[in-house]
Image 1 (cartoon, helix red, strand yellow):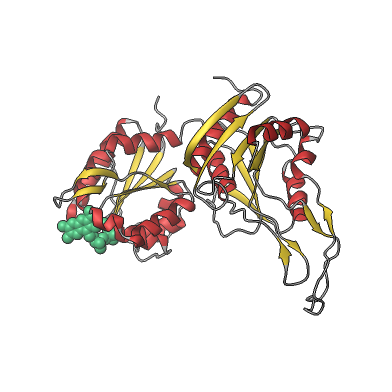
Image 2 (cartoon, helix red, strand yellow; image 1 turned 60 degrees about the vertical axis):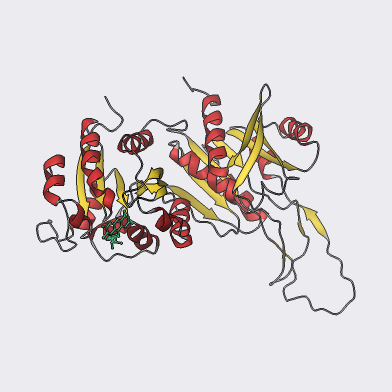
Length: 401
Ligand SMILES: Cc1cc2nc3c(=O)[nH]c(=O)nc-3n(C[C@H](O)[C@H](O)[C@H](O)COP(=O)(O)O)c2cc1C
């Protein structure tokens, strides 16, 4: 029994020199008992014939947006619904640009938009095309939207260049897609994560806030969803997007975040508090913009409720994970917070190193529980998030190795 047995894999092939490798990809997916349907762009058909792909997949190859044979003349919707996963391999620079910008001008790009299944994109192109800022920005955008980017690999290219841009090895593509269908560390679990800063209004145009970017919380939400968790992300005001399989609740203030959290944690298994919730909020919010008259002004603040401590004190509490961002005595402070708030786990961050943490894409941390202290060395926030989620998964009640 393979992870891919009986899975419906929709394979999109675009116009690049590596298109011939898509033939082998179909065979390897079929070896794992996956059902494979192939959709090709017009350019792809210049590199490999639809007949080859049809013979290997055992299914008609789809090329045209206007499909008279489809039941309601809407082949793209039928295919999108059929798919358990949409895999684009090879993905040309052009196709990556088109899907990043939401274009729908042929069958494959239209069904990309229509498809709610998990998406995998395996880029393949000349190293200079791959290195272009436009390509890199597009890839980053897709990745932030929850698309799994597979590769590319580095090495000698068909054009004679050496560098990054080769299609990832077919076996590696198959195993990445297959991993997705493995029972993840949080399969069957409900997870609630808070992320980002809060904004505490002073008057209709001013607020108190902090530098939290929300990136760590968004990375954790993605890792939790990829690990099979039914994930709710309660997000303060940040400019970040998340994948369709994450339920997102947007809030502004600490008070709103507490209310949204209490609503969401009912019946949940794991609560991860990454949000940098304001500790204090103005006692009064002026109805009108405060005028610049006096040389000094005083603002009276009151403590906000501690969301994490509130959740951890609930009678039916979930597994509670906190974050401690400190500049000195990081571990001792974090351990104190773990005990004071009765948490199950705390992730200690040294934010005195300004190259990691708050606005950065990288982070390093120490994972602390009552009986463990695990150093998680510097890596991308997504990698760090995956390691944290794995550790949480193994510590949940009912977990079996
Ligand atoms: C011989 C040849 C090889 C090409 N190889 C690639 C490639 O490996 N990767 C890529 O992104 N574009 C490649 N291109 C350019 C694409 O074919 C072109 O951008 C095309 O519009 C892609 O269409 P599609 O994205 O709709 O499939 C190549 C073009 C030619 C003529």
